[in-house]
Every structure is written in structure tokens, then in C-alpha cells.
Length: 228
Image 1 (tube, rainbow, N blue to C red):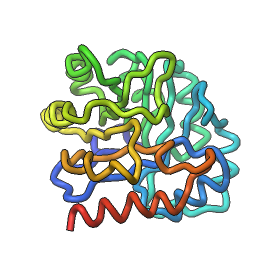
Image 2 (image 1 turned 120 degrees about the vertical axis):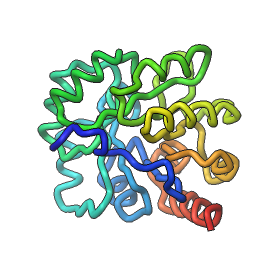
Image 3 (image 1 turned 180 degrees about the horizontal axis):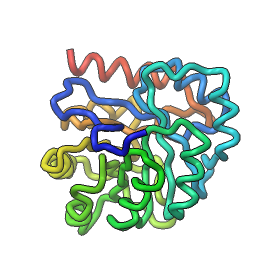
């Protein structure tokens, strides 16, 4: 698979926000996400209550058809060898680095895994300047909340008034920018007003720790209605 910059990316001129349903951790979650309107399915290969193994994901995907959906593998400060090994086992389209990975480390991951690489940026002081350091290396961004002791999946949102600045920087770099953290069917319309390239949701589409098709449908309907 080519590591070209178009892989796993999308044009900012797209009228409809892309959806990434992340943190799938069971066969039921995968089935629900595959039946949904999501563009991307995310799997966490890092310390997390949603952590999964490549072997599990391979088993869940075996009877399924991905159609036009793309798979995202999420890693936190993992070694290049670890990421490349998982990429060999699974048909991942995108590697998402969600920790303190440097631009040089991202470049090494792209070379070894031969996949597009997205970088998570945790909102807060210095976040926009940090984002600029990955220009020419990152194939996309996920801007998430900064929560002490956690890298993501907290269900906590950040101040979305900052979203336009991240979108502008991503557009300058020519790559997509997804917004994550605390997005639910109840507040998604407020985020849509900023027209992000994509929305990354995990806990906001869960009920009792499982992906909920009804909540997925609510998200999708609100996105479709907003962009009519």
C-alpha cells in the first residue's frame, strides 16, 4: 500500500463531515459500525478500557465486508516495529498516533507501515504551534481534549470555539482535521456549525459500554439534516 499523502485523506471542500466511530472492542461493536454510516472504524491498540488485540480484530473482521469503510489503528507512544507488525496483520488504512510522537517518529512510522498517518493534537496551550511542527509529515489530524492521566476516550469536550484555528491550519497543510472528545447526539449540531472535516466519536455512541446503533443513527441523521 502506498504511503502517498492522498491515502486516508479527504478534500476540505467536501460538503458533509466524515464520521469515525472509534474504540470498537467486540464483534457486536464491529457489526454495528459496519452497518452504520461511518466512514472510518477505529481500533485502540494501547492501554485503555477499549484496548483490543490485532488477533481479536482480525477475527471480528473475518466474516465481514468493509465496503468503502476504512480502518484506523490507534497507537499511543508505540514503537515503530510494534505499529508495523500490527499493520502487517490487519488491513489498516490509517495509523493514528495519539501520544507524544515527534514528527521524525511519524515519518518513521509512515516508512515502516506504508500507511497514511494521522496525529492527535491535545487542545490546550501550545497545541496549535505543535500542530504546525507536523506539516508535511502528518496526513491528517485528530484534535482531542487534554485530560490528565488519559490520552483519549474520556467523553470530555474542549472549547469548540478553538476549532476554526485547527481547521485553518489543517487546510493550510492540505490535510483533514477531525474533532474528538465528548461529542454526543445531543451536542453534535453545535460542533457541526464549525464545519469540521470529520468527527471522531467513541463514548458518545455507546450505551453501557457497547456501541449503540440508535445513537449512531441519531448522529448520522443530524449530520445529514445539517448539510441539506
